Image (cartoon, rainbow, N blue to C red; front, side, top):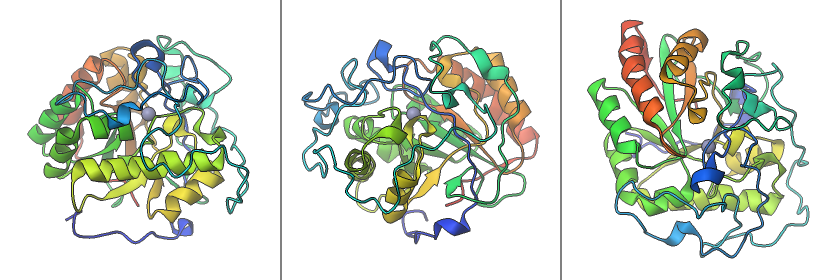
Length: 336
Ligand SMILES: [Zn+2]
């Protein structure tokens, strides 16, 4: 199905905007894995260059190795046919590259606050104010399901990685479909997992090659590279016919420029409406209760299958899946 129906890129105007933001942060510094989270160690400038790119190393067989070498988050293109190696002169992205201000609603997640270098261990605002920004209306960033109604879209970022298999097993138990926002170099390193995701009927989302943050501040050419090359790497890992319907900016760092690049590639910009900050390992009960509190019908839940130890995410999912089913939720994909 998703393999056969290629989605036309719908005009951004037709999509409901949700300025969810928040963001992934790299917990990476520690493990050399890119992860979603706050500003902490993640914000390494994309400069460490030269590293032969984890992307090309078919390192681990399965889910083992994700990683760009420690500290390599945000490395510039090193993979073969990188379109953009040069630090762009503002080569006229159709729209000015204005880093948008973080979420209008304040704090769906602290990842919104680039200024607040939260330590990856500080679950600070996990209980913070309710999220959902004013929703429908303006922009192309999607934060709702395709079908609406009592549906939910589960999304998993930063994989594929060691936890992906477990998550796939759990999803299968509950006949749940999900969307995996994969980091290009992880997909390239774990093609078998990408294929497994597809074979199980899940869908794929581009989450950049290296997970650089703050993503919204990348020069145009680098943003083009991160988005385009990751999409290509995921397609190559998935095999012929693989489709990638969405792009999710690392850290939720969307701006007019990267949204336009995304749309130009026929993908939709994917945000979320529920963020339990599982990447920060706030504890299983916190993850579960945040989802239970924040979720509304048609919601998109942000979780992670990569970026470090995902034991809490897996444990939370074991509770959340039956809860969702009991609540009458049907599993859906995000709108596109
Ligand atoms: Zn991420």
